[in-house]
Image (tube, rainbow, N blue to C red; front, side):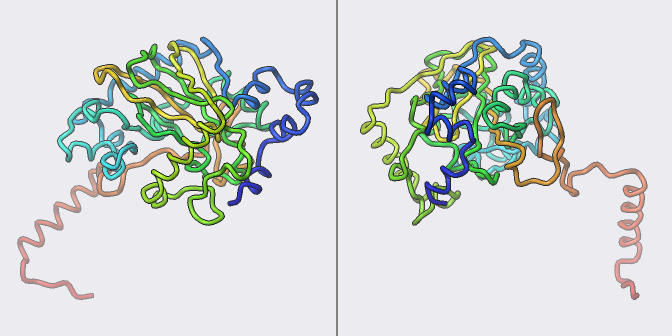
Length: 336
């Protein structure tokens, strides 16, 4: 994808704001206009405490991996190379981690909204869906959710380069929901206002004529990408903003905003947060969708692999009988 192709996929609100900001101001809310101009908007104390309480109650059952159910053990994880290679939560025990909080910063629990109704309800909280519906001009759809216990310590990046499971690449925004008051020493979110407004020449090309990243690209050219973003920040004199929210606040950022997780100054501090990425429902590539309030969830409910599913008693009896038969007739072969 070329930068020009990306610009063609921007929401109508954004294309209008860039060509006729006065007209856009007469159509869209001040919050949408701030988002389009700065790449970020903050809504103080708009997330209902009950939604946060329900989600936290479910989260409390996850850290002790030995006591985690088989189904919850299949929750996907990402982050550092170690986390990515482990793939799922239960595999952390192979690496000697019996409590996922021992994994340190960077660990992401992926798509908890597929496992917990509380996570889905939080992802589709009214303030998020109403804002995105105005921004996209249609019902929003949840692409993925990420849950952090500590800082991501993720290098500066732009989401659109990595999150592209949707057809209109410019229809991308993320909601950052703190699950607790965030301390300055816990490795808070850092972002650069206005950094989403790039000219075609300012896009990083992972490969020739390609502004989207693959996993292999990230490994091979990740340092070049980081240097490119740092160069843009210096050239444009963008100043960092540190997000120190209270529980109940909400931040929504643009898919092209430069942001990352700062380093933890106190490794004992948590930075529990829930991050969700959205696109317009019409831009999602999946076919099946579930309506949730004013938005759509395209993910399928999780299920255990066949080898891990509890077997029903007729299957267990048949399996045991087969094993006994093999012992009684060890040398016999069955002929069909």
